[in-house]
Length: 433
Ligand SMILES: N[C@@H](CCOP(=O)(O)O)C(=O)O
Image (cartoon, rainbow, N blue to C red):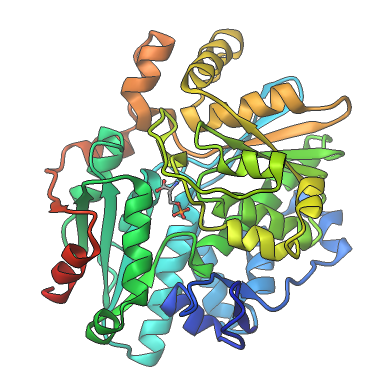
């Protein structure tokens, strides 16, 4: 499979090059030349297949031309060592719980897959050390740090906005040591993402060290996120509810919803998508006006969605041939304030005894307001509510248990490097590494 850049200056790039480079030299995001459809027969008995079996079929469509079948199967099976159950919450609304992985967020799927695929390429080529830069507004950093921990030949730098991630999220990537370094940036998530992108464009830095990204910029991080859309559909089919499926995705950098849109393009029977924003409603405004105006992000209680310039907007545009009408035909939007998010969490807890995290709450609310008669909704519960313990406890007025997996992270000692949001400081730091 060949890849091209959304900025059209790079074409015929191999999977390996796309994964190792992360971002194209023309600053575009890589897209596969072909999005292969899965045969209709695949859906006939999809409800009888396991998560791993479904993911192997999807992975084969994306990566089967470039990775030996047994290696790919091994990567998928190692990645998906946990479930992603679909849980009914209220009439016709289901939660796709993506928080059963090691860091309790959906990013575990892409982070673990990418770590294994990159590891495969490094072993195959005997490459020099690869340095993974990752900007995080909360969950990506933990998943990537965890997925890459101890992987030979790779060093990870996690850039996160000082004071803008939850205490548990911060502990998850600042306490690991080994090949993981946390950089605490005096700025927003957008500043972190801008530093990462600027690093890829800097010739001197790239001559000094091999850099790649583990954000959803990277095809190996974002494409595997399609796996769980197929698995969600399979579970809905098993429940006899697979007609008129609407999927609502709490959206920040738009990698997650883009993976779902790829699934739809491959034939997954999803009627339409809803992108739920918090107050960082850049995409919502685009849907309303046709004008895309990125702006600095504001801090909200759904912090992983605090993104002011969503990277994957470029992929959404490319997928729909830059047509606003075509995008609006498949995706609608919603936007919620912190007060509305909190109100939703409280109401759902009281009425259904289901504990939403602030991101999932945006997804649930958009479905409860936007589902039409005869439709069944799935929202992505992107992270475990305990990752936002203080916020959640204040809202529901009850104590939230911390799962043992998370407690283990809390015991470690935070180690981070203070970093300014100026590129020169970041570059100097990396040049001296
Ligand atoms: N929501 C993210 C921000 C980065 O998104 P990504 O999917 O591009 O890695 C986070 O939690 O860090």
